[in-house]
Image (cartoon, helix red, strand yellow):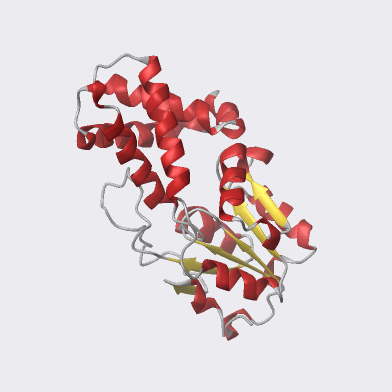
Length: 251
């Protein structure tokens, strides 16, 4: 059973990356390996990572408003290669083939390093016996499907909503309403568990859902300027619970 704060909850949706699985740790491992395995670029892995972080932040801020978004939704490879090309360009390296090789190594190594957090499977299995479960995850259709397959968790989630498949991602209200319709429940009877305060918790609260914000020390993207997990402002709306381990959801 869920903790008493969630009495009345009849369905649970989870975010995927850095809520159930170690996405940013895997991404950092993949980037390091890619930059170490391709010394022909003539720069240190540290310099490459620094420039990648700048290129990543710039790309993410604009991608939803450009022609790249359609490509991003369909295929992680296209925009992953483009991001490496932009990173190399910042270093005055103009080599399309190298961008492709870096992207490929990064993808392979990231997927190899990706794993569930230690407690995730135990919690999913227990909750799946009592509640319909679902995923609402942002990202390209192919990459998110590959992650779900690699983590071997599809059987526990009859309701899966991937940004790339619907061309709608969090925090867009429409993806939450679609999720409500899938389980046939009003928002106040649904719990959302996610790691991003901005993209998971704030919209879920706004749309009437119960919320559990999971904060982990590892939840720091390579592009982070602070080196710390996301913070919540003192005057901002609070989730129903803040946790550091998914087992805290269980009574």
